[in-house]
Length: 214
Ligand code: AR6
Image 1: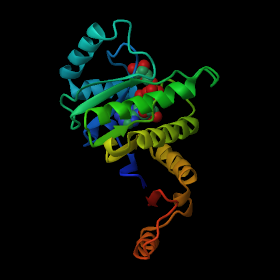
Image 2: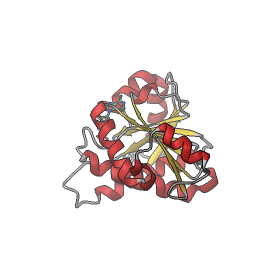
Image 3: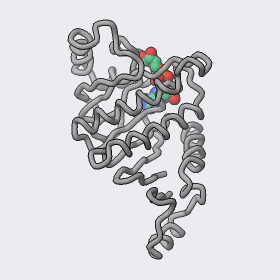
């Protein structure tokens, strides 16, 4: 599934974040930046020692007390296909009244801003905080989509060309796809490819400035 927001395609994909052929993958890290389980463990394992070394240096030089939730830093990608890893820390879910949504939005927005600052063209996100940190999946997806669209609007011409949302399971993919359909008005029509081509041929745009297609 793909939605166009300005110059950026937001692409929903199913897969493993460590396999993504993008300029940067985002790591759902913890403040230590020293690795852990889930996405974090997979990225550090597959990326190898270069990521560990650069994370250690970031801790030493910039964040001796750990990376605060919502902030983002960047290292090279080591042995990953992605050239860079953007490490961010999502919120731990504590019921929803402790600023979790703001911190989650900041994690997405700061990661995107960092990618833009580095001139990167494509970035892949996992569903931050929805694993070990316990954020309810649908709520987290809504916050993520809203934060991404807001930051893309803010970045304008320097926004990356592709923002990929990588879901680990079929179930998560389906749930996020359903949310995207309700979030982006053009997608609510669930156009199939042929209908989309006919719409394009007529030269119409859906829900301007969003140009959406499935
Ligand atoms: N590729 C894509 N998505 C994945 C992968 C993968 N290889 N592995 C898991 N997911 P989590 P969090 C999904 O726990 O909730 C770590 O120990 C997973 O199904 O990785 O932000 C860190 O060190 C879930 O939907 O991140 C922190 O301590 C989503 O990615 C803590 O976990 C996020 O799950 C961070 O917890």
